[in-house]
Structures are given as C-alpha cells and as structure tokens.
Length: 219
Length: 228
Image (cartoon, rainbow over all chains, first blue to last red; front, top):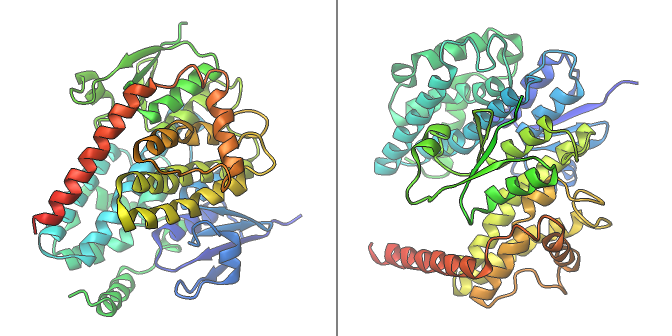
C-alpha cells in the first residue's frame, strides 16, 4: 500500500523548506502544492483551520501542521532511514530545546531587520548576531548540530541560510564576519542534496523581499 | 544506581507546575529547589544560561529546560503512565494542541486580562475564537488525553487555575459556562483531579501577584503612550 503524501507549501518559507528536507532525507515521494497566500485554497483552510498557514503535510488524507511537529512526525513514521533525532532521551531533549530557541528568535529578528530601519533595525541586528553566536557556540567543533550526522537542529536552522543574504543586504552587515563557523556549517549542509534541492537561491529571496518592501512602502 | 531528580521552580510558575504534575503522576521521586526569580541562584544560571528561567529539570546532574521539552523527556525516560499517545499521528495532534495552548490561547487570555475598554472587548473576541477551538477538540472526551489526563491536559491545565484568578481580578467572565460548556466542565474536572488538586499554588497569594502584574501592565502602557 503506497503512502500518499502531499505538502502544502510556499517557495520562500523557511518552515516549508524544513519539511522538504525531511521528506528528501527519508527518500519519500510526495506531491507539492504551492499555495497563494493571498488567496488560500479550500484545501488549506480545511486542513489547517486553526492557523490557516503552511506548511501542512497531508499523509493519507490526514493533516499535520507546524513544521517542527511535521518533521518529528516524519522522523517517527519513517524511522528506519536517516534518523533526524537520536534515540537517547537527553540528546532528543537538547535537540528540541535548540529547535525551540531557533523558532523563537531567528524568524522574528530576521523579519525585523528587513522591515525596519534606524534604532529598531540596529537592535534587531545586534540581537540576531547574539543568537547566531550562541548557536555557533552550540555547534562547537562538530560537523553538524546533530554530531557526526545531519539532524533535527540542522534541519531547523539551515533553512534560514538562504535568507541570510537578504538580512545582510537590508541590514548592511555580514554574518560570516562574526560567525564564520556557522557559515562554514551552512556550506557543509548545502553539500547534501536534501538541502540543496530544498532551498531556493538567496538572490531570488532577496528580489522577492525587494518587491515586498516596495509593496508595503518600506524604504 | 540511585536516580537523582531535581526540579528548579518558583512557587507560582505555571510552567513549572506542569512538571510537578508530570513527576507526581508518574510517581517519580524528586527534590524541589525553589528559586526567587528576582534573585536567581548561580546554579539556575549555570543550568539554563540561555533563558535563565524555570522550570529546569536536572536528572543525574544533566539539566533540561523549557517545559514542553522537559515533559517529553520525562515521558521518554519514565515509561509508566504515558503522557503522550503511542501513535505518531495522535502524538502530532497532541503536540499541536499544546503549542496552540501556549502560543495562542494563553497570549489571548493574557490580553483580555491586561487591556481595558475597547481593546479588552476586541481581546475577548480573539480569545473566544481560540477557546472555541479547544471546546471543539474536547468534544466526546473527559480530558484532552481521553479517559485520563495526558500531555495536552498538563500543558493547558494552568488555564483551569489562572482563568478564574484573572476573572476575579478584572470582574469579567472569560470562560462562560453557557458559551463554552465543555471547556468549563474540563476546567472543573482537571482542577479537582487527584494530584492536580493538591498542587495548586495558594490562591490568595496568586490574586495578589496577578493584581500586581495587572497594575504594572497598566502603568507601563499608560507611560509608554504618554512619553511620545
């Protein structure tokens, strides 16, 4: 009996990218449906009535929402290939802690950088760099956050890497200058086909945000 | 080999209460370390340098922070009286409702508590939308976990205590028995359940604390609107 997997997605969403990576890591075939976020499909509204957001994974007709929850679900159901979480409860707890940290910080701070200016932007830049430095410290000398192998925290963070150029460009700063090991880690991740096939080009994201800024009158 | 389990908490933290309940429900022996959050101990700062918050569970010297993370750790380490379902899809649903509880429900209830006038009316409408989802989810079940208390009940459980405290202070009904009968009923059942009912923080102290939080919120919002 074949699994039916559909992903409701949006090309530039770091959260959608996480699910793409997990599905490819597990070698799963799936149908991808691009949502128009200004005109959400009846399917999206039916499958995620609470938040009406992507990504939504639909597995044999049943929806799973929220990217960390979806990635854990994928890891639990298809547990025999490329495990993203350790079997050890303490390691799992550490991974979930850092994924939660990433979720609470990076998106909001990055977003503030390209939507604000002056003092607000400076404050967001400063805080983002502090967070990335903390994450770089957590990475330490390991090749991946998961240790020898690419794992849950790597999936959670690497999808922001295609947005770094946008943050740096509109914020006028360099992430590599202060977090060289983190940038080296992003390049290491991009050597994996699951990552390189799931992340759009950084310039494409930048141009998209340029259009958004014009549309919202952010100068 | 002896297990050493310590819980760093404050007397009032509802997030720490989740962990107290989980440990007691599973019959796990542990030592409590009460923190004064206005004067955090060096040990707290060492165990949770990133957030510097409670709760922190320390198991055989290794710290785990963030209540959701701790709950899952407890459930995976001590397998008796499971909190999360076994089926991956049901687990995903449980995690979804827990996250919804913290991200949306708690935030919207807090907004009803601290806002005034028209803003409060709007906050109440938003809170009702969120609470209605919970009303729908509990249909046909005594607890969110089914016949017995589970992960989602432990995460949402703070509502069973905090909502009535907020309602008493502001004189406004947030979970009206007529409008949200199933949720209201769950709040009573949960609050009175064995173990849960023995571990609520003292209500009079909570009223004083939350009144002070409300006063501070009002003061900071009026000062920020007048200092432009």
